[in-house]
Image 1 (cartoon, one colour):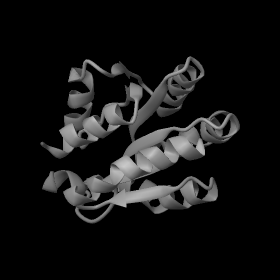
Image 2: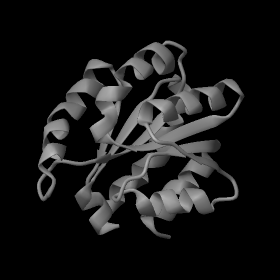
Image 3: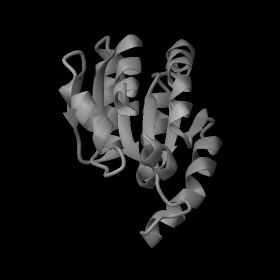
Image 4: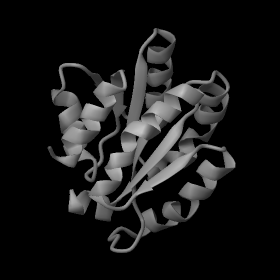
Length: 165
């Protein structure tokens, strides 16, 4: 089973029925697997804060939801995370491509990488960083903890994770 298939299988096993995604080259494989799943309702969106609103609606309608997004948009999601997701205790797994580390070819991505973990930490959002494909072994436990605690969780996946996958 590929890492992409494993991620989707863990989503399904943990009752995630709704996933929204924002296009991302690094996440394209897992987005394709989500879209192909007959157990997940996939709704692509244009902006991450919009996607979080969709996930909140799904949650309030009785479904478990997740968002797949890039770290470059963490800044625009701060208000949504604090005043919607956290305020209403919405468990939201966020599978996030972590752009801007060693080997990054786009200079502007580096700047947001410097702030991503600090912003998540400031919001008291548990953050997990996947560097190697084997790190995905932790996803099931992260999802279970996220739903049990009724809090968002950030799973950062860097280029080395996807290259090894």
